[in-house]
Amino acid sequence: MKIWIAITCLISLAAFAKSDKLELRYYVSGMSCGSCVSNIKHALLALPELKDQIVEVKVGELNLQLAAEKFDSSKVNCQISNAIQSQTSYKLYMDKEMKKLACNDK
Image (cartoon, rainbow, N blue to C red; front, top):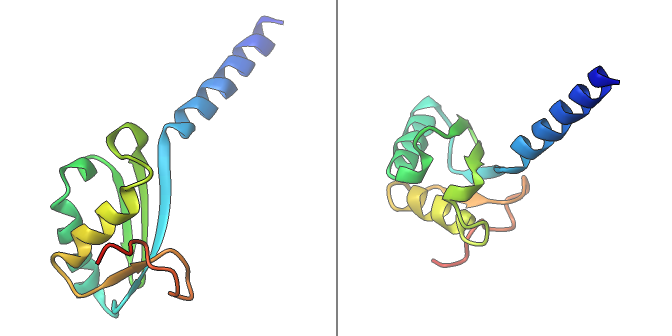
């Protein structure tokens, strides 16, 4: 019985820990090489909120795992998009077909 309770608690804690992360995927137009990946990473470093966050950039795609308490979920898409567009000509999209911009502010 004690083992069952301990396992249940661990599962609950794991679910709670995962829920405090924002997992985001963006598609990036205009990226075609490793240098582009480097440019995106450099632009993202301009956001202090991204320090110590999980950032994966590959050609055409950006995956982030962010601490939810550091970002307003209603504004995070524009924060990320604006950071990238301020230093590059790339645009972020929410869909692989690149029809829905991550942010329509600009």
